[in-house]
Amino acid sequence: MLSRYTRPGLYTGAQMAVGGLGYGLLEILCRGYTHISMILVGGICFVAMVRISKSSLTFAAQCLTGALFITAMEFAAGWLVNLRMGLGVWDYSQEPLHLYGQICPKFTILWCALCAVVLPLCRLARRFPASLAQSRPCPADAAGRLHNLPK
Image (cartoon, rainbow, N blue to C red; front, side):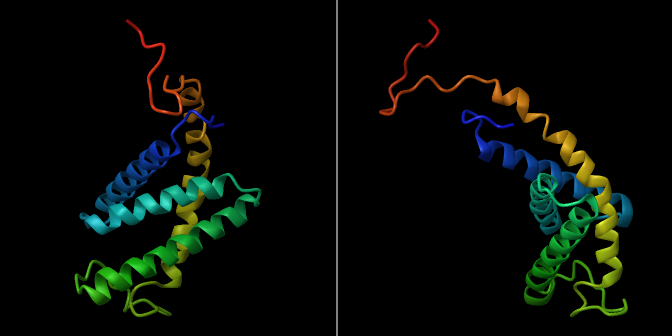
């Protein structure tokens, strides 16, 4: 559990980095390359997975929620990066039931399976900030003056 002394932005930033780098490495392993936009999207999705893992939903509902979130992010990123900017990072137009070549049911099912692996890891990762919560607050008062500094 995070205490009031833990900086949530720092924790979210760490989640973004872990998720972005993790997804980037996964994509490199599977496709042989990645794009910087996928690192950003992977980070955002991982932050969402951590939040979803805290919910009271059943595990199956968490996986489905995660898959739908990832699919929505994939569509938003695809619309911007592929359709608007014309970078052609991916193209699902050969897949059945695709939407503008950016999302398709096949990959939504794949994201659901990925969530089944990532969500338990998120539960484990939530234990890490417990050590951060033991950290001491900054010794400054409301006016920003420092007190009780080590000499």
